[in-house]
Length: 131
Image (cartoon, rainbow, N blue to C red):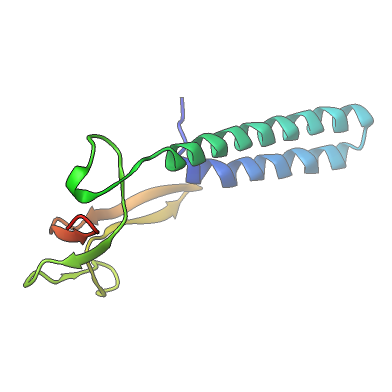
């Protein structure tokens, strides 16, 4: 079974909906329109549910102070700073940053293929009201 990430599925599903509506328009019969509308609405409901779950995951992630962070996924709010003497430059743009992750992909034969990816390994400091 092919699994799609959230970012891959949304444009693909919109393309499927457009293709179904185009096929119904070319066929032009009321029965085909009814089937097309059921398919388009079903895909729309699936998209809504998937987006809702994705949003709830983000909104349900607790915000913590650095000093009292729980185990698992948590959200931190603060100011990030580089460790003195360890300047990090992003791999692709060369701009200074505290952390980066990148992925370079190329489209071949209607599919995307990863060419290069990576992330920084340097630590950084996060300052919040707890120190």
